[in-house]
Length: 247
Image 1 (tube, rainbow, N blue to C red):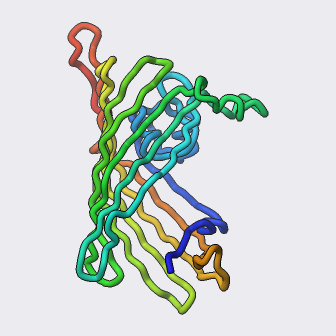
Image 2 (cartoon, rainbow, N blue to C red):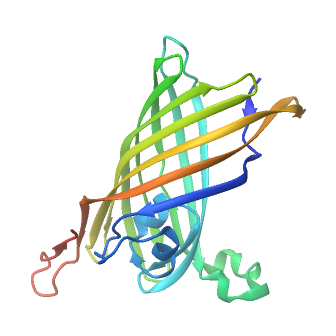
Image 3 (cartoon, one colour):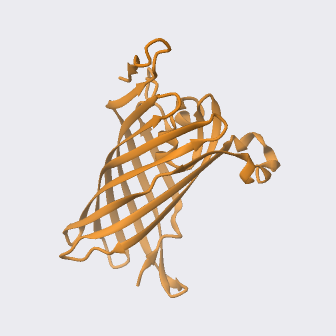
């Protein structure tokens, strides 16, 4: 039976983010500091997902819907394909609106919209280990700034499954990727690399929901931005070509 992940993460989530945003900082940053203090580009919000970010001089609350479907499931001797259509919508910071935040979700209050479709090739290397290269290409629109942004993300993931006991399983996943953007109006562009590694511990539950078995678990994710892969360039007012790399 297919297993659903509705209860995964009930126990909790611990996330550490070490790295470098688009604008170089003198010290390493937690994800909370990245969201609250550092101004980032559109691609950061599109890739990192739901959260509050400082984008283009204003604070934006982003909601990401990770839509995906499997065209062909991988088997022991054959690869599989999975298609992704993540959609992210952004509104002016909802935390400052108090009880009026629901009203702010109306379509006419929308600030940004991002769609980043892509595919994932799933290749089993052994009964317990898969490798999954992927590519996303799409774009977004900042309605308040009148900016259109082209975006891409590509990289490779791996997933290993270990059965610890009859009802316990441990998943170990890793991702190495690069993401970048190009703003059509301002001609700004930026990009960053990121490495992620996570452990997901789950336990099967003794009951089902709508004919599907359930599990419960907890997971830990480590993230590190790759400084040598990060770039940011803003055209000079005189030449339209000068900029600065991020170290």
